[in-house]
Image 1 (cartoon, one colour):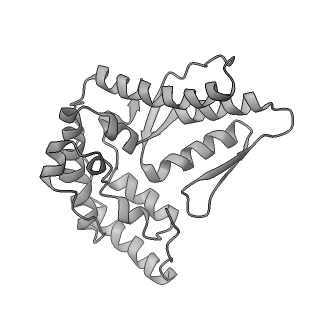
Image 2 (cartoon, helix red, strand yellow):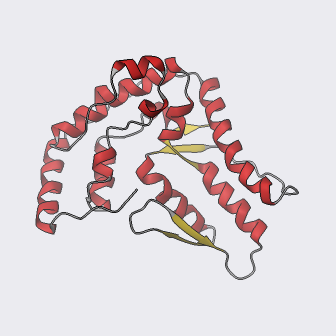
Length: 216
């Protein structure tokens, strides 16, 4: 991901005001999860197992801590949540200027193993929605895609924000992996809006359905 040129401050302030007015009555409809708890658990387990594999590669003697819950967040908010978690644990974590990566270093009194385990804890506590969408069975992914198309994209478009259409139906039916990484928020995240504006948008047009936000 590369940094984009930011829009003039006056235009951004106007955009915030317009978005606030349009989205005032925009809210998702709460619904029972269309995806089974077993499927969500399986996708979560695959995600946190991959995170732990990175620790085991360097420290095969490490004891894996239990992380009971994983919060699924937007891809934009994922690294920000992770960095906040690392800082709360006392580590020196810094987000890059464009928010696409972060740096991590230990502080006095912490071993590299302790840093690796803390990093795993924070990785396991927060997962980007793209990781879950790519791991869902085809039938379950259909429910997430329906949420994107039926609520998120119309919500963004109604506020005058860009949200290109997803790959065609043929890619969806074939299970094309690139199609699963489509997200109606992509151009909004890359558009140079202030963090506070994106936070507001994600509150009004949640990029993650309520049935997916917390997994065990």
